[in-house]
Image 1 (tube, rainbow, N blue to C red):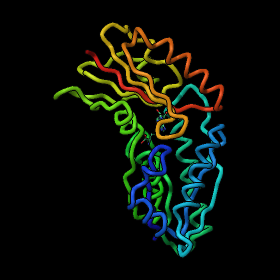
Image 2 (spheres, rainbow, N blue to C red; image 1 turned 90 degrees about the vertical axis):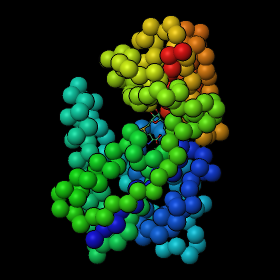
Image 3 (cartoon, rainbow, N blue to C red; image 1 turned 180 degrees about the vertical axis):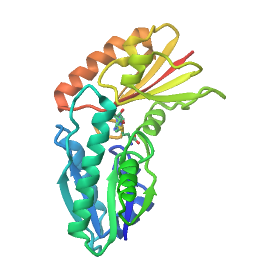
Length: 251
Ligand SMILES: C[S@@+](CC[C@H](N)C(=O)[O-])C[C@H]1O[C@@H](n2cnc3c(N)ncnc32)[C@H](O)[C@@H]1O
């Protein structure tokens, strides 16, 4: 039996790692650490740093790095993601069989929290469906949305109103969702908000949240949209990668 702990580690600030996450890391016999090969080496380094700093000298945890399979960029997005998840599940299974042939405790460091736009729970589910004896545990982590609202000192929702969490791709394709007073946007390849009529929309934007290079901008969309797009491009150029998230609200 493999006990797999998906351990939320927050989004870049080591002080956001919970005590429960530290305990789960130290309890694991094996930590699997993906190398993403997408220019975001800072993020792999951060995971390595967390392992180095948080694993106690007495812990018997082994850290094994592996190359994450790449998703192919074909037009059938959901089909490509499905194949990609299958490939990742295969790599996880092979690593577990090699390093823990008798079973044991495996930990994986999950960016933010495993519940939010992260597929590790779905991939673990595939392994179980394929017959792997697997007990799945989750240690919750602080999400990028929580850091965004904390840094801007705002509530996520307007009083008694709903919030929709969506992706940049979906916002571009479908526009403002019916009945949403606020929309949180993740995984935007850049400036999906510019596809909306800006009147009456306020935006709170954040990049590299929780990290030393964190950037924040807020204002009426019509006033700040161009400067967010400009800053985003410049930051991406400077650091080689960017992750940003934003909240839009009708006011
Ligand atoms: C694959 S999702 C993972 C989300 C993560 N599970 C969480 O709890 O926040 C990646 C997206 O989360 C957002 N994100 C994650 N970390 C971030 C950070 N440090 N700063 C800004 N946005 C971040 C970005 O929208 C990015 O495209």
